Image (spheres, one colour):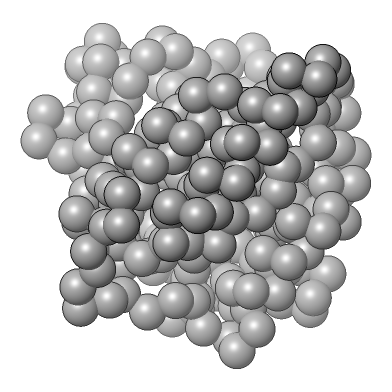
Length: 254
């Protein structure tokens, strides 16, 4: 089975998809065959399926797999998977997701899985995103905000993952809004410095704010794949052909 990585976020709208696509492109440029998976996606319009996260990830790696393989569960309502599935009277099966991941993992050097929302978002009444990560036995990359509020969200996410024994490859900070004022620059610098001191994980970024990436997502992701934070992350997780190992125990420094 190939190596794999799970891309999660401190919240929704922090840039998981564009980071996932950029990282997949960066790994491809390093000579790896990369597969992608977005096992659960909500807020998917049938009329705009080509604009879905799964479709964008598919294009980033050359569109070699059917969309149904990349994303076995797609829902119309833009809400948590638990609610979206209940609304459509469907039941999510983790075994379907696990089997789908295994099939992809057998075909590619690296398989990247993008989550939905944050790590404690419910998938079913008894399973959340963190439980899915644990069942897939994957380390994580956390995408977080570099702005004010990013410290609390990032530390809560790290603590939740560590409580499950899930290894963290890196925290990648993203500018979800432009940094235009001296005050905003001071706040961002403080967020980055504090997270580097207190989390005990590699903190990369911040990635530049890209307000118009939705107009040409693939072009934006291709450019972002050349950003030092993305290229550094790609080299980190593929330097010896292995993802970080699951620790026997890991006490949080938070």
